[in-house]
Length: 363
Image 1 (tube, rainbow, N blue to C red):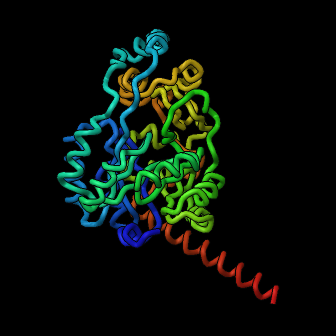
Image 2 (image 1 turned 60 degrees about the vertical axis):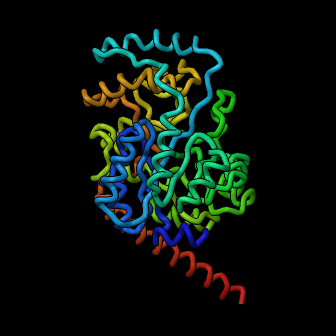
Image 3 (image 1 turned 90 degrees about the vertical axis):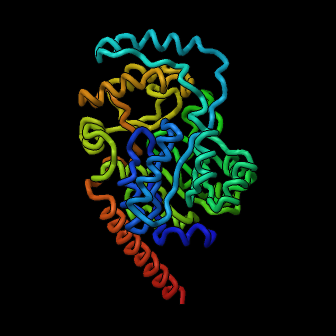
């Protein structure tokens, strides 16, 4: 990895930006202070809301951190499918005694306004999800002193990230919790995701820029594995979801290790885009009928998800989680980074010892 990026955080541990109120300043600060790279999630916030969180984070740590931004989404070819889905969700609205949201709640997530803030008052790192920014945007951020990372889920997407001039690519395997960061959303590609180790090998051969591995990583040994496979750092989301500082609701944190929620599945039920969630009632009942319509479905179901969280009903919430969710540990975030670092060091020592033993046998 380029020294410009590695110099920012001594440990190869990146805390994934989890939108929806999870990646709060306290979480990012704790990770940064422990030697990792903490992230704020600007998704679903206003530009001012993002700025206020940046200010709070700066008050908690003087270490480098990152901010994640969602790319604007194209207009839908048809909205009829969203209307049909809204009719199907009428019973949910009645059950939770709330109204469905307005599916026309905006498609750009305040992208231009957020970029204006980040260029006016630069942060060390900015990452992008759901697509690749224009070369000029990345160039302007670089001139402002900001390093850029962009998520990719295929080697072709990784090449597009490199071509745009980004400093690094986040290779997101299908194991990852929450939204897949695909650049183009098509229902034809549902179920075609690539596992992290396979993706990492392909991306490493496709691009020359640094690679951050993401997807299902919960232990230091796994970090060692992706580093050995060519990654320059590992990004963990679900591992930090259960920490003390995480802003996730209690029912969401508890569900990660609750035997009642034994599996995860990629679904469009909550937002209209493929996202990995624990399998609950809402996902089972509505997932098969949810259209490929992001962020329209996100806006539509937002009041339902908030009402379910307020009622403490995990069966109606979007329980984002990666495939390693049962390995979640309820620890302070800083302590989790320390444990991961110790596990990483132990795994590296074991690999080194095994390598020396093999060499001695050859000799």
